[in-house]
Structures are given as C-alpha cells and as structure tokens.
Length: 247
Image (cartoon, rainbow, N blue to C red; front, top):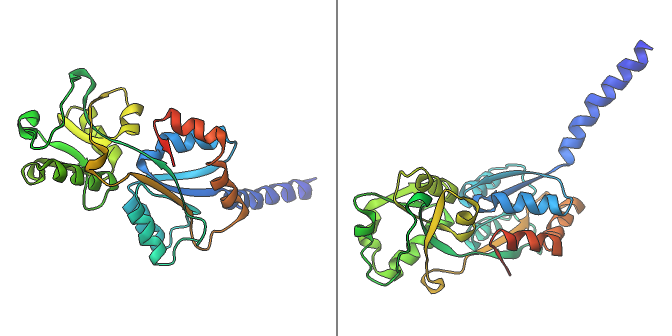
C-alpha cells in the first residue's frame, strides 16, 4: 500500500509540471488585458498571460522569454521581432484596431474640442499630460503623432507624464495625479474612474493595429488553435464589446 501511495504521489508530481509546460503563454499589449482574457474564456481556451508595453514584451522575447504567442499594439514591434527571426512566418495576422482618446478623471467629466493649435497648456492648468512613453509604448507613439498633427507637440512635450504602459498612463488620470491623459478608447471604456473628453482624429496618427503571431520555436497545434479561436464569432463578440474594431 505504501509503495502504491508513493507511486501515485510521484506520478502526480511528474504530471503537474508537464501540464503546466503544455499551457500556452501569451505575451500581449497592456491594452488587451481585459478583452483577451475574456475572449479566451468565451472560446474555452486556456492560457497564461503576461501583459505589458509591446516594447517590453518584444525585447523579452528577443532575449529568450518562453512566450508562445505575441500580440502587439502596433506593427513596429511585430516587425522588430520578425526582422530578427523571432516570429513564425505565415502566422502573423492583424486582428484588431482601436481609437485614441483624451481622458479626464470621471469626477471632473467635461467635453473638450480638438482642433489644430488648441491651447493644451491652458487645459492642463499647470498639470501634466499622461501618456505611454512615446519612445517605447505604442500608445505614446500614436499620441505624439496626434500632438504633432495638432501642431502642439513642442509646447506640450515638457509637460508629459511618461508612463511605462498605456494602462499606467490611465492610472495617473484615474488617481487624479494628472488632469488629462491620452489612451486607447478601449482602456477608457474599461475604467469607470475616467471619462472620455474627446476622440482624437483618426487622420492625426497612424492606424492603430494589433498584429498577433506565433513565436519562433513555439509553433504547436495548441498555439495555432488559440490564434484561430481569437478569430471566431465568440471572440469577435467579446472584442467588439470591449470597444475594439475587427480588421
């Protein structure tokens, strides 16, 4: 009996790591945090997720992080990995798009008119504009493009509060540490503590696209099935409910 119990225990200890090893690890842009987890649940797929700025995740993959799938908030970081042979050719697909919005704390809700040459400094009233760091975060890069299009980048740049991700930028506004922020429309929709003051013109920045791909060396039936599931009707419903547009 003791030998049998010892065998069962040993088998259990061996099986657990195998099961964990077979579970997909998805590296995804911070703005996908809610929608991607909901889509996985809606389609019955199991995975572990790591959400952060696309730049952070791409560099981790470049350095050997064991991600199975990479979901970026822009084409540039997917290109970065593809050029280094870190993505499986033929698996890359752009599934989603988004909008850029100007947000305020929910308890200070107001509408703001967007126009070229607008006086953003007056709106900030001595405070800062929260954005993802334009040097690293896709949302920040889109924000810079919009501010340049509006003709106010040079004036506003010294007043930026540069955050490590778009969600971190939103948190600054949520807590009232900054009076304004620029984030994705989907992020604002997910957070009742912020309100949308304006939508930035689509022509003011590059198209906000979300490419997904399997990471090199991790091309498995499970990874391909997961990507296919994200394109299913059930997943599409979830993404649209979270404010994403489908490509």
